[in-house]
Length: 71
Image (cartoon, rainbow, N blue to C red; front, side):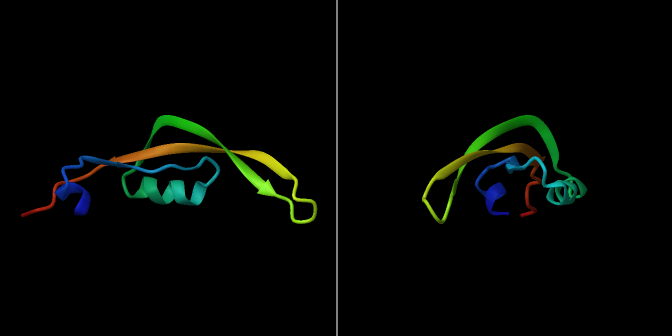
């Protein structure tokens, strides 16, 4: 309601590409992947020697159209 009151017509969310549980939940609520994806670098700090290991997180972007709230 807040988003539609502000004039927004759609919502998007980024989620980890391997998060099948969240993806299925969003799809059941009418969300669909729009083909966009990104890869983020993440730092995993080792606790003993403080070396940083860089890994990557691939994300996909589902979206949904928002219905205007009834006034």
